[in-house]
Structures are given as C-alpha cells and as structure tokens.
Image (cartoon, rainbow, N blue to C red; front, top):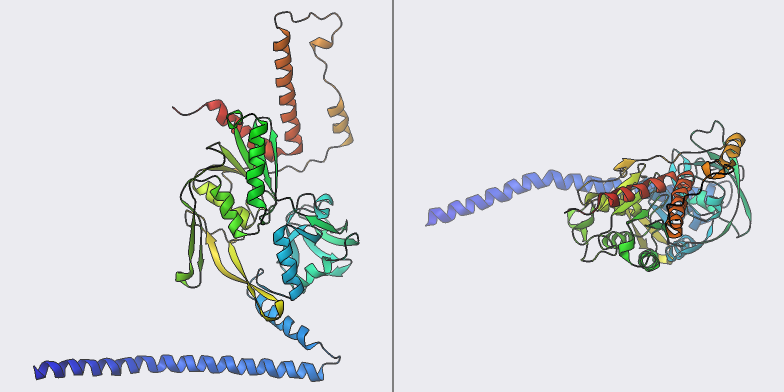
Length: 444
C-alpha cells in the first residue's frame, strides 16, 4: 500500500516537474511579448510628445489621437475604421433610411475609392455613376493616400451644393469628370411592381425598413393581380444593392424559406460563431423565384442570394457579386464615438465563404451597354408595314371581337416584353425564365 502511495506521489512530482519544464519557456515567451508591446506603446507615447511639442505647426491633440486610432484600424482591412461622434451619428441615421450625400456605397482599392454601387434614384445614380467605377479626384483634389473616411468626408457637403468627381471606368480610355448636385438621400428600401404576370421586388438596401417594405410590396402585387394564383413567379432584384443590416438579410431570406440554415458567422474564437435558421412560412407560397445580382451586390445581398441558391429555392441570374463576406461589429466608445471592427466571416448554408469570391450566378447574363446611333434610332422609330396596311386588304371575319381584342392584348404584352429587353436585358431574361417554368406546368 505504501509502495502504491509513493508511486502515485512520484508520478505527481514528475508531472509537476514536466509541467514546469514546458511552462517555463512559454511563460518567458509571453513575458517577452508583453515587454515588446509595452516598449512599442512607450514608443508611441514618445512620438506623440515629439509631434505635440516639436511639429512645425501647433496640432490638435485629439485629432492626432483619432488619426492614430483610425490608422491602426484601417491597417487591418478596408471595412474596419474609427467613427468620430459625428460619423457615428451619421451611421445611425443611415440605417434608418435617410441621410445627406451623393448616394453611393464605396470601398477602397489600390489607394483609390471604388464604387460598390450607386443607390437607385440618388444624384450619383442619375449622374450615371456605375458599380466598379474608381473615383480618383474630388473637386480636382486627389484622394490617393487618404483613408476611406477622409475621402468620404471630401464628398460630403451641404444639400444643393455641386461636387465634381473624376472617374476612371473600365472600357473608357481616359478619366472623365462627373458633376453631381448633393441632395438628401431618402432610401426606399423596396420598390414593388408587376411586369406581365411576374412580381418584381427591387431591393435597394438593407435598413430597418427592408423587410416590412418587402412584405407590404409583395402583398400589394398579389392583391393587384387578383390573387397569388395569377402570378407566375417573382424576381428579387438585388443588383447594385450594397448591403446593410445582417438582421434584415436574415429576415428577407426567411421570407422565402420554410426551414434550414440561412447563414452562419465564424470569428476568431470558434465558440463565438452563430447560426441563423429559417422559420416556417413562405410569403410567396412556393412561387418560383429568380434572384438578380451583379458586381454591385454586396454583403447582405450576397447572404440572401447565397441562402436561396444553396437551398435551391431560387435561380440566381446576372454576374458575379462583389465578394464582401465579412461581418463588422459597431462598438460604442467613450465620447460618443464608435469603432467599426471586422469580427467574423459569414458562410452560406453549404459552408462556402463569399469573401473575395462573391456569389456566382447559376446563369451568367451580362447587361449590355447599348449606345444607339442616330441611324438605329431612326430605324427603330420606323413602323413596320403589314398586310392590314395594304389598300383593299381583306378583313379577318373568322374571329369575334373578343378574340380580336385578346390577340391585340397579347401582342401588346409581347411588345412590352420586347421593350423591356431593350431597357433592362437582365430583368427581361429573369422574367423569361419564370415564363418557361410556368409553361412546363406543375410536376405530377
């Protein structure tokens, strides 16, 4: 018995010695690391004092510290940044759906400001700014070397004032200037309409109003159609939608899913990951869905497109999305400022990360850039002659007035569809897909 106890104690002592031998170097490394961090913080303090006392001009100490904080955050990735009290207040206003500015969502790439997407109906959209454009100058001042927040600040100004931005666009040989009048940006999160027998839900942003607007808009289209049975499907148009609130992306996805995962987030600590699942209920009652995306579809838009695609609930049409697959958490700081920090990546139900890759459409459809010449416009305006235009042509006496009226209505619909192909080829393509699915009939 004594031998057993001694053996046990011997084992314990050996374990303590072994632990000490392993922990010793680790503890030394940790102490060395902490020592290095404190030395660097002391270095920061020394530099701050030198600047404060010896810089050629007097500096604002608070601005200097803010710049240092922002530099630390922006060195991490394009989406992490410091928000001054004014910027934090402005961000809170934007999520409620109304703010002043040009109406563009931007990011930073290669030192320049890159347009993620213009927002529908805003001054930038009406001025012809496109997703993928690079802004190199604001009022002839270069934005190269500025942080994203500094560049955005240059583009802000009083409502009604003019701004001239210099744009570099793929396919254009030279940079060109665009004059824009700043305005109050009132975001209509969802615009609903019906094209033929198809409900079209144009989602421009994901703010507090997105899901309520979407639900209300779809219900209105169903009512105007005389019942959901009179619709052949719906198009969820997420083109040039820069994203927004994760909670709204989840609600919009859930609106068309009965069950299953919508999105998951994974951070640095595996225990901090979250999964969001759909609840029972489909607003469209199983109608076929086509989701439209392009290079201006980012963040929350990609969550919705990826979830509906992975669950085979929708056909995704258009071009590859932007590829912003990271989650930013806004953390309030003392003094009413805030820190926007990238804390996680999000993953679609199949487990794929969209970061830098984007959502790939099931059917790739480019939106052609059509520049009609005067000759083409003259040809399109020229009316095509038919048998009915010939003098003395015979009447068609085999059809009743109602049948003739129906033929004319069908022809008008076909002509409207043809015009839509000219105005918005991608949307027309999506509607044609739904027509094809309807023509096949229900599965037996």
